[in-house]
Length: 110
Image 1 (cartoon, rainbow, N blue to C red):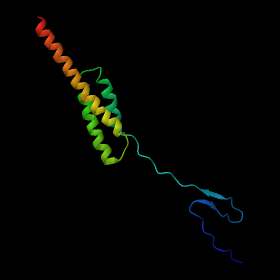
Image 2: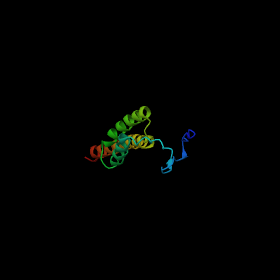
Image 3: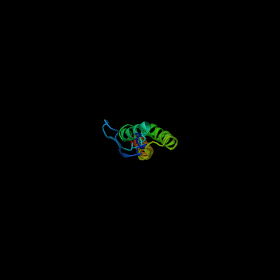
Image 4: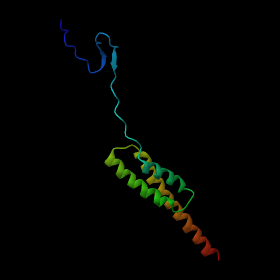
């Protein structure tokens, strides 16, 4: 006698043939895109720019580059890149004002 043809469902329980173990199928979760590495570098540089003059410019440039890459690749890290840009330019402005004030004090104190 021929057995009826049994089709396996896409997910769930598959009817075992005689002598086989039951098999279970589970849906695979799609891989999530990773975090952009330049966004992380921009954030780290922006934090360092609060203590080291001139690093803020590098943080802002790397942050802009990271945002461009994120838009094309679909990676995560948009917030880190934006924070790197904002903190980098802000730190650059603060260091510029500090150095200008210091130079003015040196000129007027002599």
